Image (tube, rainbow, N blue to C red; front, side, top):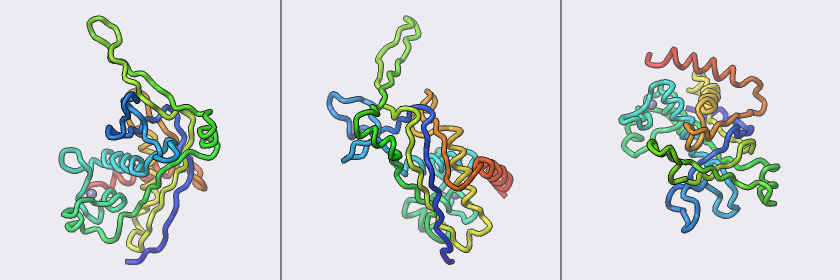
Length: 230
Ligand SMILES: [Zn+2]
């Protein structure tokens, strides 16, 4: 097995609606928001962790192909013909040992930071984060109760997209590049981060150097669907 190429998928992630990627409970400050977004510990700027985007790409592909693990967890089949396990990896020492896949996890998804224009606005205080109040409606009285403030990166903000894909000689037939595009298309159709069902997290990807990438993605989705389970 020989590494032939490391390809890069670069572009922007544009927010069509506010984005909420939660920081997790461990960082809640006393008197702070109860649903803060994740921010860089030093610059305090919001960002999209690579693990969040990668996880969403993976779970979207798993759902599309109906290839997921026990209890709805990630596919860990470790079969060489599984695009999910080959592209995104198999985790857990036991599963890793049992895996029949040759070579390392093919993709790496970098943390996505705001593009320069938005970073400058943020640094100068001109890009405040948005606070959205989510109410629970009391079914009997019809009034709103317990508003929970949800922090979001406002719509229209752009982040840089950077994914690298390792291509080995044994991968030639598999068109993994198109599968990565297909995953991004699925994320566009669903969303990124939390509270998607309440309107958050709609994104659009713009990919440098690939015009009409959505068409390639669509064709690959059809192809994957028809070859799935053979
Ligand atoms: Zn698998």
